Image (cartoon, rainbow over all chains, first blue to last red; front, side, top):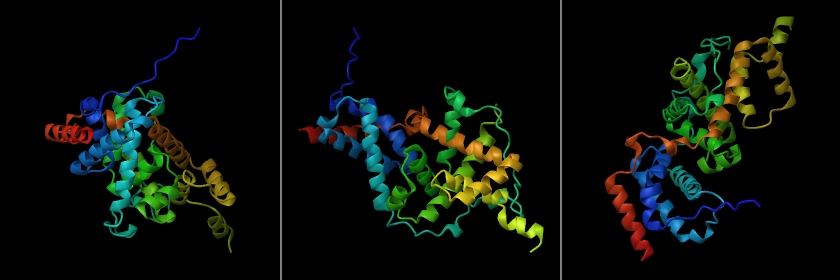
Length: 193
Length: 94
């Protein structure tokens, strides 16, 4: 007979902060740079979790469930914030990847061969730390768009709505984010290997 | 149109290819763009590498919730925030 795996249960709310507070806070800080906003988002996440505790059905771990709530809170925050930010003016940004190419459009800074495939060395914490640091060092707008797209798996249409940008600008931002990130990984990590 | 100029018109350079490869991760490109990328990739090992690395970037991103797992104590909740949030939760329960 198959042994029944106990479903993860939600601990009492009075231990939430000690158990999950730091994790949620670090996650929030990776998405919003302002520590006071990150704290606020963590607090809102716990309050929302409190209101909808009965929806926790033990299909995922409590931490995963809380992160899912936090992700929604972060998206709400981006939505509110988009009105305060200047409209798209991509030309004024200094993150353009033009310097990677010469005037003929050929590589000036050529992509190096990656001797190790980092996806095969996922256990190597070192690499993931470098990856995370490179993402967090991207200009905020690039980082935000990149994480919504690649880590949260949202479509460009969804991202356009949340950030109030056009699809074309979204593609440009993602391109710049990927170019910067690739370069950062190459400089920081691949030299170590 | 001379042959060289004609070729240029129908071929992407590395800069174009890098943009289009990135775009292809976000939407389905028209057939002729995909064909032009393929043609360029067959001849250019740097763009080939670039494309492979873009796919690796995508794969890595989907593998991780790492931001939450970072061990850097600088990113932990401060003692003040911790007790403030606890108070808010407690008063919400009562």
